[in-house]
Each structure stands twice: as structure tokens, then as C-alpha cells.
Image 1: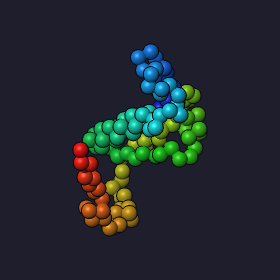
Image 2 (image 1 turned 180 degrees about the vertical axis):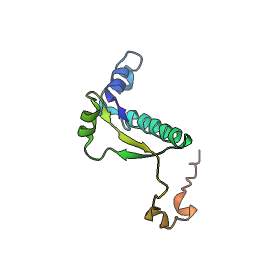
Image 3 (image 1 turned 120 degrees about the vertical axis):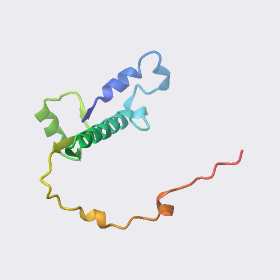
Length: 116
């Protein structure tokens, strides 16, 4: 999965979006290209599972330049790689599944609205 931040920056320098100030990458408080890549990744992973395959996301922590070079991609930023296959049925259960689940009160935060 890759992103093209330059496409977003170009779009936000067009006349109808210019006043947003988002034609500069540093102006984005949260770069939407990451959000869009994450949503596309989730949709793809769900489709893969729905079709009976197995997959995992290999996040872009290292070797990103090598992956882009291998794929012949020069003008995009790597978000992550999706590994797809079929298991042999002998997958060990992850030890992290044994961690205790925090109580709901610890996971859910409620914020009271400010009085008007």
C-alpha cells in the first residue's frame, strides 16, 4: 500500500481549495493520505478474509526503500505491505491473547458536554 502526498498537495493548491492553506505538507495537522491508506488497507484485508484467504499488514518500519525499489515504485510513499496466503492450519495462538482485557470503564471515556 502506498500513498501520494503530492496529489493531495496539488489538489489543495487549486483555486477552490487554496484558502485552506493545505498546499504545504507541514500545514496538515493529520495527513489525510495516511488516513485514506489506512481505510483502503482495512477494506482490502476484510475482502481478503471474506474470500477465505489469510493476510497480515507488514507496517512500514524498515526496508521501505527496498520494498519500493523491488516493486518499481519511484514517486509514492510506502504505507505498508499486505502479505496474503493460505495457512496450513497449524498457526500457534499469539501469546498476547492471554493478556487481561481492561474493564470497560478503563477503555471508554465519557466527556460531559460543557454547559451553554
